[in-house]
Length: 447
Image (cartoon, rainbow, N blue to C red; front, top):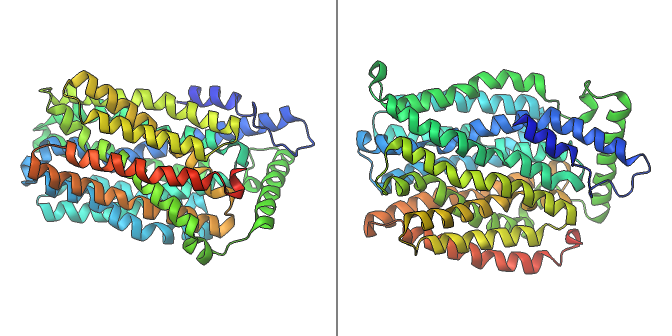
């Protein structure tokens, strides 16, 4: 992971140097490389663990559903209910992060979700399952938007697309590592009297607990606190970021309340909602779809990792391309539309290989949407309004994570197929993304 980050960090300044800088461009590029190598690998590792703990129940379901008596509908409700408390707690969590600092708040988030993830191994009823998913959503709320806000405090706007893309590469990495690992852990069924799905929750939950104290050591809240940078570098990076903030505020300064009620913030949330629907529709049900091909649990894990391999490269490339062209709306829109179209196509295909190929394209494009999209809020929101606005977009958007698994599960119980629900969310994503692009490209920050 670190070698990949170093390679991309070496290219971080190409075509994306601070346009108003009067200092040596090479020095600025070296500064961004150093910050990237210090911060991003660790954040990627934390997010790999976070995402794995959020979605590993998709593999646990291969055994857990039978043990707990869960139907596809009740499983989908339990999978989605995580996002209910996640949505409710996300804005308050991000505002507390802004108040107390990222390092302390992110460490608190990781410790609490790690404890709950491990405790999930000992549930015995559907009610226990719902309770732990609600608690996990509340515990993890604020981590994703908090990290996104944290990046705006460290990286100038010209670099954010590729940096966000690099950080979000954690999602496919978690699939590449986590899918085969989860499939293998299910084979431990009976070891020490525990089911395989229980070992899955325990082993994949412990790293969050172990990493939480390291957050306090590795990251600092702002460049001004980074003693690992030379004084001149701290001053230079702080000056660039303060200058950008003032430039945005000269156009329009929003309070937290104004940001939360801003119509464009709400429309961004609606667009993100469709992207979350696409992502979670694939994530929570792909292992069950693949298992239906007649594969073992271990084979299922290996096959499910394949879409993540493609997504890893496409996500990073698309974020860099967005930075190089300094264009966000078109890149985000194209990724979401192609992701929806590929998923819709996959649901019409009966051949397993062709279906997996279409799902891989859909997954890669759906993830690629995130890098250019999350560079947009910071172009017109700053400070506490950025913390609140980013959290609002994320919170309202990830409500799709609550709706999608539940709806798909219920429709599966009624029809015996996953295609009806997945096709519906694919059409919704394409329909909402078109006006997002047409309106967004005319906004001031798009120029």
